[in-house]
Amino acid sequence: MLFRMVDAREWRFQRAVARVEAAVEEIVADFATSYVGRAVQRRDVLPPRPRPGIAWSIDGDLVVEFVHRDARPDQLLVHDVALLDTLKRRFRTRHVEVAHVAANRVP
View 1 (cartoon, rainbow, N blue to C red):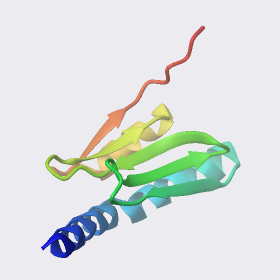
View 2 (view 1 turned 60 degrees about the vertical axis):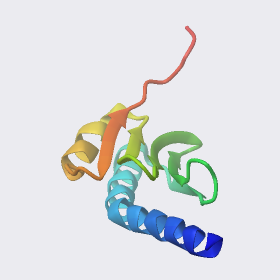
View 3 (view 1 turned 90 degrees about the vertical axis):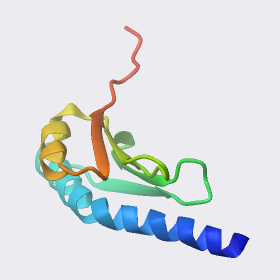
């Protein structure tokens, strides 16, 4: 029974990633090469971690995070405001919430 639950959780995670992966990669890669002039790095946080997802960064700065949640809609957390409108337009769905995350910087 536990084996089936783990498989179902993994399957839901893979389905959620497939829903956002191609679009986010395209948008972030275009932004990185056209405006920043740097390459994109991707880091996967796989289940059974409490908050599995994917993080995209440019030159070490986190720009977009995808966070998979089982009980609620998944989150796409945008750290760079230049990407926010494009991602919000692309993901008008009940499955993914797109939100801006303000940087915690001390002046």
